[in-house]
Amino acid sequence: MRIQRTFLTVLITFCLTACAWAQASPVAQSPAAGIPAIDKFKNSDRVLILAPHPDDEAIACAGVIQDALKSGAQVRIVYLTNGDHNEFAFIVYEKRLVVRRSAFIHLGKLRKQEAIKAAKVLGLGEDKLLFLGYPDFGTFAVFARYWQRSRPYMSWLTRISSVPYKGDLSYGASYTGESILSDMKRVLMDYKPNKIFVSHPADTNPDHRAFYLFLEIALADTEKFIGRPQVHSYLVHSYGWPVPRHYHPELWLMPPEQFRGSAVQWKKFELSAEELNKKYMAILCNKTQTESSAFYLLAFARRNELFGDYPVARLIDRNQPNEGKLLMGARILDDLMRGSSEGESAEDALVLRGKGRVRYELKDGSFIIGISKPKEANSRFSAMVYIFGYSKKTPFEQMPKICVILQRKALSVFDANTQINAEGAVMEFGEKEVVFNIPLKVLGDPDFILVSARAQTNMLQHDASAFRKIILK
Image (cartoon, one colour):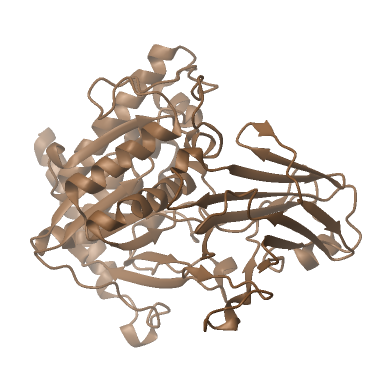
C-alpha cells in the first residue's frame, strides 16, 4: 500500500505539472522569450556543477543536469559545505535546539544523504558527487582572511576548525584558504571540465559568493594546463526574489527587478515537463530544508533555469600609454544592489535601492573606487570595499586580501585580519560620493582584481555590488 501511495503521488504531481505546462502562454508571449538559451550539451562535454550547499544543485541546475546526462555528457557535482549551519531549518526538522558539535556533524551527514538521494532522482550516482565539508556560512571569511595563518577559521556555532566528515575529500583539512583552493585546483586538474555551473557573484549568501571567488582563482592558476572552461553563474539568494513564492511550474524564472539594465548577460535553460517534475522531486529530497522553506525552494521549480554573469572588464590608466587599447575601458560603472529597506528615508531611497552607483577607475598607478551616497548622510554613512588581487608572479596565498572600511568619516585598511598602514591610500568624503584611492602596490601589483563594494546608511539597511573581475594588465 505504501508503494502504491508513493507511485500515485508521483503520477499526480507529474500530471499536474504537464497540465500547467500545456496551458502556459505560447513562447511568443513568454516574458523570457528575449533571453537566449545556453549552448546545447554534447556527448563530449564534461560538466561540473559547483554547489555551495546540498540543495543548491537541485534548486538551480536540476534541468541542466538531466539534459547533460541525456546528451551523453559527463556530469560531476562538488559541494563546498555540508550545510550544517542552518540552525533554524534544523530546529524545525529535528524539533529540538541543536547546540552540541556532534549534533551539527550529524545534521551535516543528513544533508549529505539528502543530496545523494536528490542526485539519484536526477540520474547521478553517488560516485559522481564530491563533498568538501568546509564551514557552512564561513567560507567567505576563509577566503577574505584565513591564509598563511597558524590558526584556521573556527565556525562560531559548531566550534570546528577542520573538515569533520570522514567520507569527504579532505577529511581533517584545516579551514584555510589554502585547503579550499588546493581542493578546487585538484578537482579542475583531475576532471578537466569544459562547462562549469557555479553560484553567482551577486548572491547575498556569503558561501555562494565565496565559491565563485575560489573558482576564479583556481581557474587562473590552472588555465595554462586545462584552458578556460565556459562558466555559467546561477542566482539563488536575492532580496525579494523569486516572486511569487511557492510551486508555480507554469511560470518563467526571470531575473530580479534590481538587475534590470545591469551588465549581466542572462541565459536560460528550458525544462521539459518530465525534467521539471524530477526537479520538483529532487528538491523535496532535501527534507531538512523543505520542512521550513518549501515555499521558497519550490519557487525555483519553473519552466526554466537562469544563468548569467557580468562580462570581464578591463581598466586602462588614463595617464599611462595605452599601447593601442581602447580608452573606453577607462571607467566602469556598476549598481549597488538593493538590500534590506527597513528604516530607509526618502533621501536614502534616491541614491540607494538600485539607484546607487559604484565606479572603478585606474589612474596614476592607483585603483579608484567611487561610491554614491545620500546628500545629507554624513556620520551615519559607512562603506566597505573588498579587493582581492591576483598576480601570475605571486602565489595567491601571499597576495594582500584588502578590505577598506569607512566609518564616521574615518578610513581603515585591513590586509586579511590585520590593520595596515596603507601608504598612499586616501579618501575624499564628498557631498554625493565617497572616493577611495588605493595604490596598486598596496594590492600586490595585481594582473586582475576581484572587487565588491557595500554602502550602508543605518544598522538595518545596506546595498552591495556584485564581485566584478577587472583586468588591470
